[in-house]
Length: 225
Image (cartoon, rainbow, N blue to C red; front, side, top):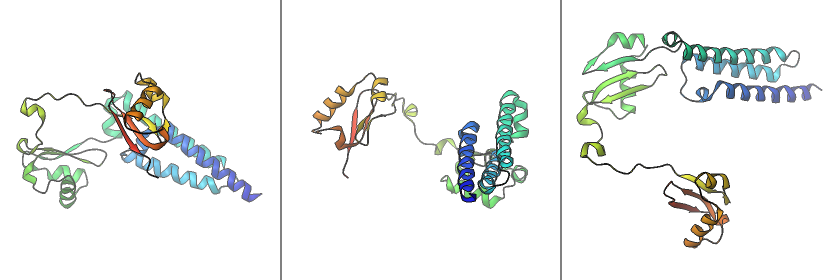
């Protein structure tokens, strides 16, 4: 009986953890700020405790729900009251600007010079003279604005106006035609069949992946398995 209880509490804790993460949003799996990081660890620990708590599983269950609600409340306060954001999420700090390093801002960010150099190198800046401004974001990432002569050349710099690229949409995946995607693009399965015939492909089952853009450009990858 205890083994059955263990299975039940484990499955319930997994389900509650999944639902709580969904309620809290994708921010929990993206770059986290300090509060989200601590909350994520805590909820995970409570879920693990709930999986093995056979006597009173409702206690960790309630704690998970309360932590999820508290996190959503903090997010609501942050969105509703912009002035509170700097207290809840912190503020970005300028670590370098116009050739000058700001030691005090590094201290406030609890970042030493060696760590700053590593973060610069990770973004491809081995020479600090190529950096105009470096900002330490509240999610722990370093944003760098290069000096004008070092930034990548853009079509606008050359007075060019290339056509806007559009994303490709999956129309065949794992040998199956995706009817909903085709309908959203104003196409149908007959159009796909014609594209396959033009490319000497017998059936959609021979295609691992096929994509189509807004200009109805058809790109496919054969199923070689």
